[in-house]
Length: 239
Ligand SMILES: *Cc1c(COP(=O)(O)O)cnc(C)c1O
Image (cartoon, rainbow, N blue to C red; front, side):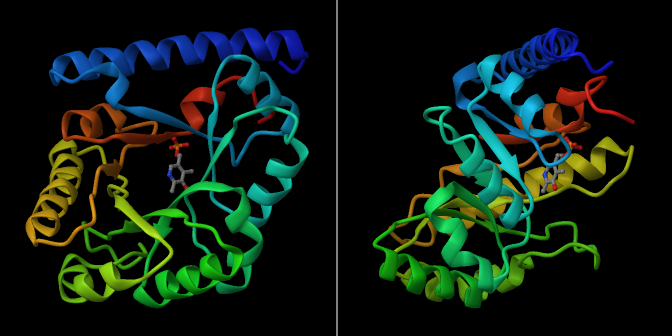
């Protein structure tokens, strides 16, 4: 399947299913459906497919590589009010070029990186919103703050100027065990509540958690942003 019309109708079907699953999960959790924002992760899609996705009404797009985000933000610049989310590692040498394009950086994984973002944002007179990535599950393969690191560095993190700390992000382990996944997401929410209660004047509204295989659990545990890729593009990409 690769004709543009076929791709678009497949996307429409996938998106309709996804949005109804999001609505159902919100209803189950007693949450308003507007309290969860879908970030469509476009890292594996091509620009024409992303154009179809935009025509289907999606505006929040996520990329995990800064360079690809920049290139795509530039080539899709005629599509108005797109919101680009950086969800992957941000190298220091990419901060300056990516900042003008991003709505939200989900993946700030160290105090040093946040300080660098703050310095460059101040030079560029920008005020980026960022999330702190937390390695709740403690897997060695995952980047992010440990919960304890975050507690210890919390005051210093809050002091960084020219950035808006908007919440936390995590990834659950790749497992079929829903209890393990749920514990990870619940852990992120509890950590957020704990930090929030620590008297700082930042407001940690956002919880970025949940991907194609676990977004429903994430919604039940309080996700405000879900990052979904493969479910959206099922049947649309050359395999
Ligand atoms: C790729 C990616 C996603 C989307 O994963 P899917 O399983 O394709 O939905 C979400 N978050 C991050 C950080 C990613 O790199």
